[in-house]
Amino acid sequence: MEYTLKPDGSLAPNEAGDGDKNQDQGPGGPGDVIKDSDTANFKADVIEVSAQVPVIVDFWAPWCGPCKQLTPALEKLVRESAGAVRLVKINVDENQELAAQMRIQSIPAVYAFKGGQPVDGFMGELPESQLKSFISKLIGVAKSPVDAALEEAKAALETGDADAAGAIFGQVQAQDPSNEAALAGLIRCALATGDQDRAREMIDGLPSDLAQKGEIAAAISAVELSEQGRESGDIEELRSKIEANENDHQARFALAAALYGQDQNEAALDELLELFRRDPKWNDEAARKQLLKIFEALGATDPLTVSGRRQLSSLMFS
Image (cartoon, rainbow, N blue to C red):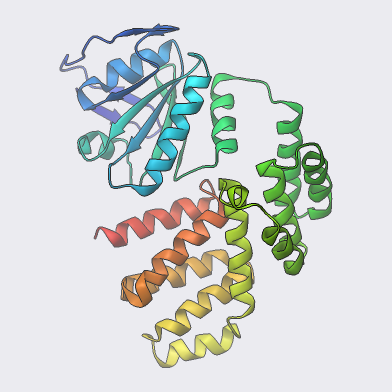
């Protein structure tokens, strides 16, 4: 069976072909709650099932490191949904035609289907709290008071009101000292107000298990990048060095750090992508590693992350 992704985002199965296979019966309707599928059975496993229950499609590959973190997290949350949502896993190495039709340019890539149509999605790895929100939105679950407060705090931080955001994050953290989103938010608030020392103090006081959690790890990356930017030197001086020698990779790397430290995130990504294009292996793949660190700090759904990942993938596989 072949499918065409229309310009409006809908997936239309071609009429020819009937390679669908019968599905096992599971709770809440036809099919297993979690299953592997392929191009031939995509219509039966995703399009048809999503007419009755939302279906999340996880595009992955065995060599994809982030996939090994994301897929188990999705499986856990889907099982906890008690049949309210299904998970279908597609190995892109074995289903390259379907991946091309879905315009999968980097993995992990996740699509949500409802009523036979793709309605939402994301690329890259997300922390569990954001995965929960993604699934809750898909199945229409009302937000808890804590989730609503965290959403309000994040919105305030994004609009530049770090004081208001910090007050809300602090209230949540006071009630739940290990709340991942609240701790990450407090670190980002300290960074937003220019108090890098306070941000570092909070990071250093975290237990190791909390420091490794998705949102907190992303906030730590943001602080580390800001610290690098502060120590990288003057932007104009670094640009002069590159003008004198376009292959001065150290100067370009430092320039990217300095630009990020001045909130010129897109320009920082451009310099790192150019460095990777010129010499992917330089300094133990420093450009690629720094790009991934910035993607983590910005968040998987940030437009700069999405665009940057696509450009990096194109360079890696060109």
